[in-house]
Picture 1: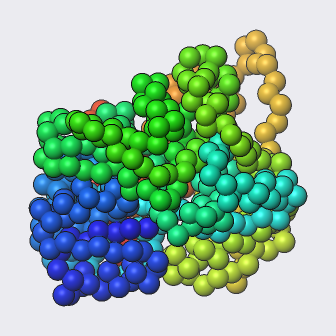
Picture 2 (picture 1 turned 45 degrees about the vertical axis):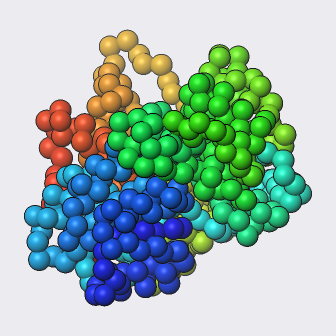
Length: 454
């Protein structure tokens, strides 16, 4: 991933930069906010911004929002001024990184910001067949549509295709169409010219130009507005884009990969997805099977995640016991690989002893067939039955706040367990606070050495 550091690299921030590079990040540096914004306008591949508290972090966040630059900002500084750290979080910084830096915290921040995993852990014949088909088409220039339920590893497969393609030396740029508001998505894709809208102080290149010569992944493309779908179709046909406010088209050389967890032919029938765009994208279709359809992958993935999160959290690597594996193999995994990953992450944190035992694997029991309620009967206490009659919004709020308490206020870990992005969690917590819910401040309840995020 590509990280922009705003501030001097002479002291602790330079140490953070070296740790990030050792973790595989590609770094750019700017001395002040003006130079940092110039870099962000010129390169849409920046995945994360680390900004020294010596600068106006809130001003940076506001300037990026005004120019429709969607990249997370992490404030960095010593613990000498906790009020400045809390203020930066309240003004929109994603997290606070205390200096001198802790390698595990930097690894966790990089991982949360990128959301990427380069590992292809495949043992089951069903998934092996999908990977073989992906490798067959990888060296072509054809668009590829990757379908499958949420959490099955569609982006991991897309990155694998890029690494096996003739464009492997070029950039791989991913854009989650579901995570960016509609008014920002167009600028993220196509870029804009100075004066294109209020706040557009200079030209900014979009994801298409950032991916020139490489691959652009449009994640959850079914969430894209129909109006933007029309512009995307034109790009696929003409191989050129129009920046917002631009006067001339710009040629681009980009291969498109797209993912969706929806049935696109059904969405075409409903009028929420353009039929011509569907046919244009659907040159090759790859389906990532659900985890319940590839049981031989469960044990291998579990061991992989156990090693990975032990390293991230600075814990010794421990194997899963036979009883733990039996518990994993007996679960339905409705959330697929993402649910398994979160379960193992939690188990790594909770396990005691030299191995991860079944007691640390917190999964629900297999779902039993529901029985119709008998007349005059009382609802069961606990379980799904206890939720009947409650609004979905209230249940979601209680789950999020309970999980946040479970992680001692650590937003990154809470978002990982919940299977949502830090941005989504932050937005929900702001809504809850506005409604009067008891949301703890970012610095409250955070264990020493943890990362506090708004």
